[in-house]
Every structure is written in structure tokens, then in C-alpha cells.
Image (cartoon, rainbow, N blue to C red):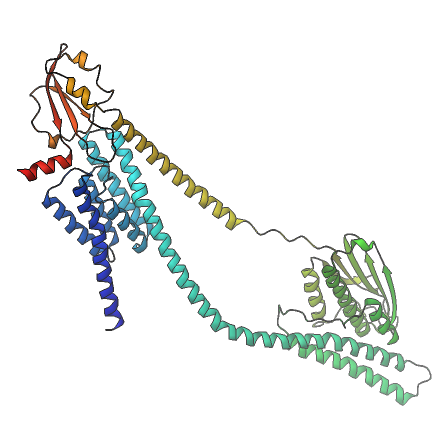
Length: 533
């Protein structure tokens, strides 16, 4: 047996089991006397309609639900029936499970509500209570099961989507791993560019100092000039190569030598022949923030100074550079300023970086932005200045917008309001139902003392405050007297079960007397009498 055949057979077996479960209340409530007795033909018709609804539950869930609703309305205008109530709720659940659009179900619910309202209005017996029971039954017997079915369906769809997403992520993981290796190579290349570029710039500075030494022979001076030019060309070539390898948005590799401070960096530059003045204005030690933040700040300060010294050595050789680091409570500020080299013209390259050489500053700006800081670089007086300001504690991360929490809260409130409204409606309906049933009871002993011919005024002294609005007239042993005013009372205050009723018929007019009294048996007693015949 192939998979398709197995699924079809399994579906038919499940359908038969569902039909058997839904027909059990139809058969049992009649035998237990929990509702008005029905003929064998009516019961058989109900079983056939249920079988049709079960068959249609998969391809046409809305017609299946409407068939169950029709059975309920045929039994009771309020839909509140023990025989077909379970089938009504189960098929509403399957409607939510199978129907694609909510509009389909809403149309079905509206049709049932309209049909029930019309039947209640035509019947005209206690319409307010009947309509309230109809609405409560529709809400709790149809809408809530339908919502449960939709939740069931959405849960299955989300689970399937989750597994599909997991498969997709697993396929993409290999691509991500390959890309991560390429990005790691690019980060290493960037590290080489910045570190080696700085060292090559210092070599160029030393070669320049050697070139201008007064006691150097001309051949050696020419060699020093060639060395300086070669170092500058190597720096430019390294920048070009790394620029091709680097991708926008790549994470930055560690750029500072482990444990090297800004003072040590400045000292190395000074030893290479640069004229550098270092000023460290220490603030309050307690204002340096947490250790992790402080480490990131110091690393960024080191990187800013390194890039500025490299640019000064490359574009303004011989210029004096001042490095100032100021630490205070709100921020750490580093300023690097170089003056114009007197040997170069007014449009000294140190004043403006040549095209294509701003990659280092762009990288620095991105790194400073990550720490919620600012970076400014540009001409200043007769030189160039780079200033970076880094908050000590950083900008507190904004709390995530509580949209999901707010949505959950609104959903919970809406669901709670719906449940509370439904519970209030059902509770009020049940309270009214219990009140009308318990306040229309005539004690059997009082009924036995009533005599035909007694004035109505005297009889009303022992009668309850309410009469039954929907008496079981079909079980009356005899028709009431013609033209008589008849009232019906329950013999017991039991709820949700068939009880005997008392019929009292009075004359019409002011001096009305009791014309007839009769006992209407329970549904079970009526069935027993019919079987005895």
C-alpha cells in the first residue's frame, strides 16, 4: 500500500470514528430523557445529516459547520441542545483548522445568528432569553472552538516554517563559513596595512633625516633619497592592495601592539626622527567608566594617534606634531596637530590629504562612531588637526521598543475582555434561566388541593409568581377547554431535565373560576406510556 492510499484509508477511518463520537449524544440524550422525545425518523435524519457533515469536513468545512448548526436550530431556536451541541462545537473547531480565511467563518456565524434570530422572532416565546442563549451558544460553542482551530493551524504552519527555515540556515551556514574566512583574511590584510604602513612611514622619516644631514656625502644622500622614495612608494602600494582586498563594513582587527600605550607609540615616532610633543592631561580616575569600556577607549585613542602620526610623516615630513590627550568625567579627547613644513609651499600636501588616501580616516571614523564618539579632521591654521572625542561611559543603549510586549498585552486584554463578556453573557443567561425555572414551580401538594370551580383569586394565593413561557404542549393528555385562559407551572425546580407540568385553565372574565386542571407528564413517562400501548 503506497503512502497516498494509506492516508485515504486513515482519513476514512478517522471520519467513521468522528461520526460515531458525534452521534453518541444524539442517541443517549433521548434514552436518558434529557430533552423532548423525538421520533425514530427524526433521529435517523439527524444521523444522516451528521454523516454528511463529517464527510464534508475536509473539502468543504463551512457547509459541514452549517449542517451541524441547522440540526441545532431545528432542535432548539437558541442552538442550546445536548444532542447536537458537541457536533456543533467540533465542526466549528475543524472550520478554524481547515478554512483559509477568517471571512468565511464570519459569514457562517452571521448566517447562523440571523437564522436563529428569525426563528426566535417567529416563535415569539420569551424572545429575549432565547436570543441571549443563542448568542452565548454561538460565542462559546462556535467562535471559541473556531479560534482554537485557527491557533492549532497556525501552530502547525509555524512549526513547518521553522523546520524549513532551519534547513535553509543549514544550507547557508557553509556559505557563511566560507565568507567568514575571506573576511578574516581581509581583516588581517587591514592590520598589515595599518601597522606596516606606520612603520614604513617612520622609515621614510628616518631616511629623510639622513638625507638632510650636513656631513653626508652626495652618493649617500642620493641613496637616502631613493630609500625615502621607495618607502613612500611601498606605503602607497600597500594601501592600494589592501584597498582592493578590504570590503565595506568589515569588522576591524586589533591594530595596536599588545600592551603598547600612546606614550610608547609617541616615543617610537620620536626615535624615528619625528618632532612630537606628547601632553597627557589626566582627569579624575573614577571617571574612566568600566574596564571594558576603558580598554576600548584607550585602543581607539592609540589608533587615532597612530593614523595621525602616519599621515604627518607621509605628507608633512619635518613638521612638528603635538599630541594632546585629555581625560575628564564625560569623555576622553585626543587632539593631534601638525604645523606646516617650512620647506614646502603654501599648498603643502600636509594640509589636505591627496585623493585616495582617506581610507584610514574613514576607518577611524567608523570605529569612533561605534563608541558613540565624534571625529573631526581638517586644516587648522597653517597645519592639519585631527580631534576625536570618546564618551567615557557611552550612550546608554536604548531599551528595545516594547512592541511585542505591548502587542501581547493588547492581545491578552482583548482575549480577556472577550472571555469576560462571554462569561457574563452566559452567566446572566443561566441565572435568568434558573430564575424562570425555579420561580414557576407549583408544589404537587398545592396542586392536589385545587378544586375545579374555585375562584381564580383564591387559587392565585398559592400560585408562584411566574408561569412557564414555553410549556410542552405536545405532551398534554387532552386539549385545553375552548376559550379558556390556561397557565402552566413546573412541578419541580430541577434544571436541564424534563419535569412534569401542571395545566390550570380558567374562565375568561372578572369572576373567573377554575375550569380544568391537568398533569403533563415528563418526556420519559410519555415514552413509557407510548411503549405500553
